[in-house]
Amino acid sequence: QVQLVESGGGSVQAGGSLRLSCAASGRSFGAWGTGWFRQAPGQEREFVAASTWSFGNIGYAESVKGRFTISRDGAKDTVYLQMNSLKPEDTAVYYCAAGPVNRATMFVSDDYTSWGQGTQVTVSS
Image 1 (cartoon, rainbow, N blue to C red):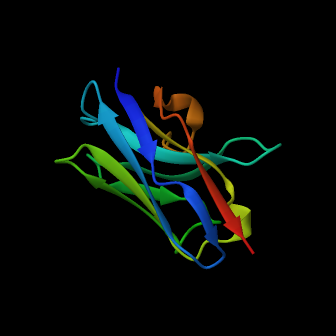
Image 2 (tube, one colour):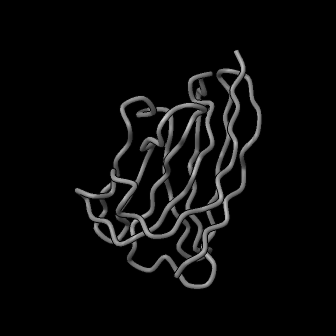
């Protein structure tokens, strides 16, 4: 099973940027898809972005489309989430995930088998 280690969270003002990283250890991502989810206090975990790298499918939640970008460095076995034009409503704990998902299931958290520990993102107005 792949272990995921996240980094890059922090506090920024509205309009600022952050880049989250998710490094694989134990084994490579291989052909697995990777996704980012977030959970704000008192709310359910929600989908943010995902990709099935082997098949070129990328998806974003409507709330982040045009502001966030998911990418991957295969040589480093690391997935990134570049977050620009951050808003206070983006405040949440962000989790990366990996698993044998496809273009239909990459939006669904239950289909991911490995999860990172979560990293806090706080956006102030």
